[in-house]
Image (cartoon, rainbow, N blue to C red; front, side, top):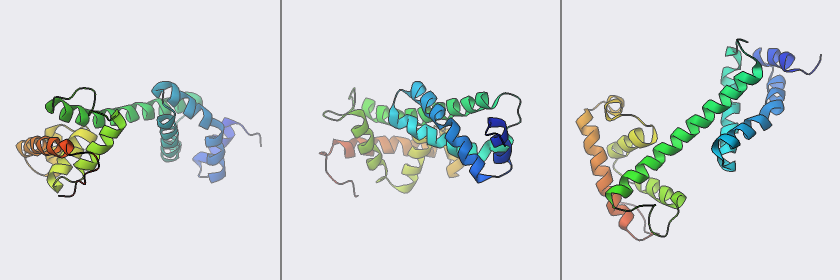
Length: 184
């Protein structure tokens, strides 16, 4: 049998693991290249390429052939890259919200954005459970206060209070010297 996309696709759709591995091998460079061009960051592009492999494994059986395989794969990569950007933006939104209330622009003094975000999420993990859950749903998952309230089975006002409380506690925690432990 000739080693073509169509032949490998049929085998992969029918559960042939070797064919699936070959399909990924044939297209992985494209996954990375498109993700890199979309995101401009090697580490993020590698993450997205890996995510595409996972998504491909879960969706290969749904490919109907309405378009070419390469077009469908490009769409998978672009969607994964956009999802990656949205997730990263949600994390930055929390950093910006706390920084704005702390009247700090451009991150925390002496820290780059990655250090500040890492320090912030370390501090978030020390918050009381319900407050931490509200922060994660609103700022990491991008849910509205109403949707977060539904997920947490509480009122929208309760979620808003948790977010307000989190910002106040995070400002205090982040004002502590770097290297201080966040155990409370």
